[in-house]
Image 1 (cartoon, one colour):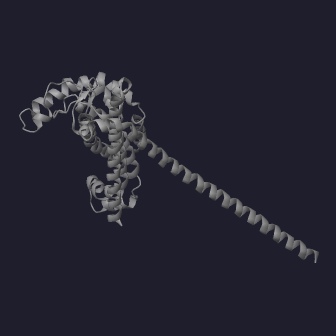
Image 2 (spheres, one colour):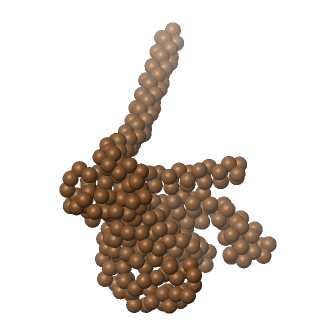
Image 3 (cartoon, one colour):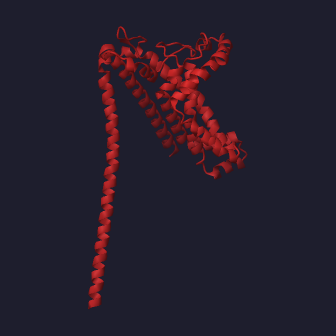
Amino acid sequence: MSDIAMEAQAVRQTVKDRARALAGIALADRLFHATTRAAAVIVLVILGGVIVSLVHGSLPAMRAFGFGFLTSQAWNPVTDNFGALPAIYGTVVTSAIAMLIAVPVGLGIATFLTELCPHPLRRPIGVAIELLAGIPSIIYGVWGLFVFAPFVQTWVQPQLISLFGDVPVLSSLFAGPPYGIGMLTASFILAIMVLPFIASISRDVFATVPPVLKEAATGIGCTTWEMMRYVVLPYTRVGVIGGVMLALGRALGETMAVTFVIGNAHKVSPSLLAPGTTISATIANEFTEAVGDIYTSALIELGLILFIITFIVLAIARYMLMRIERNAA
C-alpha cells in the first residue's frame, strides 16, 4: 500500500509540475503578445504624432496660400510669399533621374557578382559596395562639390550641350551654361548614393534562386542574359522591387548631399543643367533662418508634402507587390 501511495503522490507532483510549467509558458506567451502589440501601437502612435504635428504646423501656410502653394514658384521671405512648385519639381526630377541611372547599374552589379564574378573576388567587391552605403551623406556632398561638379562642368555638360544642341526636345533639357552644379549633378550624386542599396539587395535575392532553375535554363541553351531575364528576375521580382523602392525612398529624402550640388535656386527650369532645389534641401537651408509664423509654416508644409509624396510612392510599391503576388498565385 505504501508503494501505491508513493506512486500516486509522484503522479500528483508530476501533474502539478506540468501545470506550473504550462502556466509559465502561457504567461510568457501573453507577455510576448502584449509586448509585440504595444510595439506596433507605439509605431502607429509615433506616425500619427508626426502627421498631426506636420498638419498643425502647416495650418498658417495653408490658410495663407491654399492650394496655390503647390503651383507657385514664388519664394520671398521678405514679403512672406512662398510656393512649393520648384522644390516639388526638383525632388521628383532628381529622384527619377537617379533611379534611371542606379537601377540598371545596380542590377548589372548584382548579376556580375552572382553569375560572372570569380569566386575569390565576390566577397571583397560585395563588401566594398556595401561600404558605400555607410559613407555619410555630407561626405558625398563635399566630394560632389569639390571634385565631381568641376569634372561635370569641364567634361560632361559641354559635351551634352554640343551633342543635343540641335535636337528639338533635348536641346531644352541640356540648355544653358555649364555651371557644374545643378539638377543633373545632384541626380548623379543621388544615383551613387542609392546604388549600394539596389546592388546589395538584388545580389542577396538573386542568391536565393534555386540552382536547379539556373541549371535547367543553362541546359536548354539559355545565355546568361536569357537566364537572368526569364528565370532569375521573375523569381526574385518582389525582392528587387522592394530594394528599388527602398532606394527611391532614400533618394526622395536625401538632404545634405543634394544641398551641396543642386544650386539651391527656387525656380523651375526645363534644363537639367540649371540650378534648382528640392524639398529637403530647402528645409535644411532655411529652417534656421525662418523668422515669422508664415515662413516657418511654409517650411513645415514642405515637409508635409514630402511625407505625402513618400507615402504615395510606398503605396504604389505595395500595390505593385500585391498584384505580382496575386498574379503568381
